[in-house]
Length: 285
Image 1: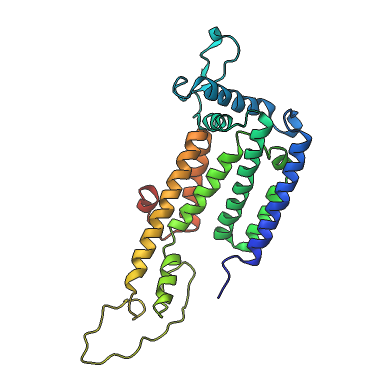
Image 2 (image 1 turned 180 degrees about the horizontal axis):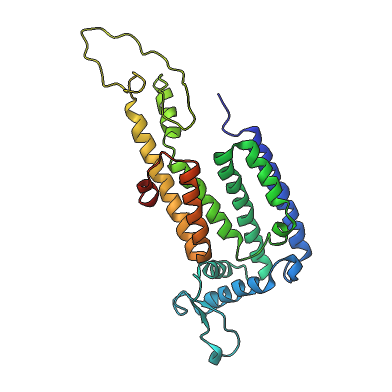
């Protein structure tokens, strides 16, 4: 039985564990204050202070808008309305959960960073292969700027949402991945259409009596189509599309500036990778 976790996956996980060790060492050295050479302290403050206000003053009282005011009551309100406020809301939830110090919330940011790195690897593995994905991951996470921003309160969960949404989008657009296991479970191997697939191995079905009425066959392969293959594929495709929608909603509600980046990704994937998938399925899943 083939292992689901490949050697490349193990190496990727090892790299991510090493990244976590490095990020926690940096966090231990600079738990709160950071200079501009170590990240963006102003961006961290703009994330932490509205979260603190959410937790202390109430989410509904602040109308779920980032409140930057501090000090006496006459300073309020100072709502920031030029960017979606999910990141600040998340900081408020951390505060409500007992993480009152900015250094404590940085730990959550590191965890988002590690999860985002894993989805980055999975995305490239699906696009370009495991070796390319592993090398790209090593280059990506070893960048000094990436490490310096590794516990930033504002960016890491957004990157995780972006990479996760892209990955699940690709999973949803490849239903043959789900139909094959169902076909094999019935003792058949159908010639399922796949980009770059030139041939496939088939197993002849057992001979039937001429008196029996033959079942509908797959016109491409001459074999019976397993009745569960399409159902399994559609159910998993719907699940992955749902996860795609969730992560992209979270991304757009965190930072609208990533929306053009996501649109470029969709267009590029359509033109370079999934030419046979119609535009209607991409724009209107």
